[in-house]
Length: 194
Image (cartoon, rainbow, N blue to C red; front, side, top):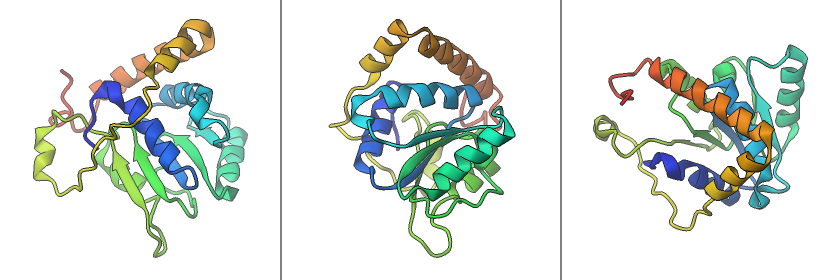
């Protein structure tokens, strides 16, 4: 999905609403991003009642195991994760993978997409990309259009950051970690720093 950076949160929420009955995994590039979106997404009134489960490598092993076990038994829900879950984990019946960020390593992209449509099942994988990435016009991808009816969730996110110090702190950490990770992207010739 070609999407401007400031529209990504709204497009994400729109996709989650439209796929409420599905089992979805959302990939983020850093643990701090998972922590941030793990506190921000549940605050949206349109996502009340959704099961949102964060999972990343900086969690204690017992917490990770509990999170994974919780997600596995759900018939619908959302797992927020990093490349920790890109390979080696058996997560059955995943309907959709949303890559909010393009993974740093191309191998992770492939393994992340492989979490869905397993064992003969149908599935979808969506990656959010900036429209400026002209190189990708040469790659055979099915382009998905941004929804014009996506709820504008950015004001709610900004309001949460102003009212809650934890949201603000997690947002700052997520931003810094994202910039660092993006700067070290393995595909820097495509995902240029500038």
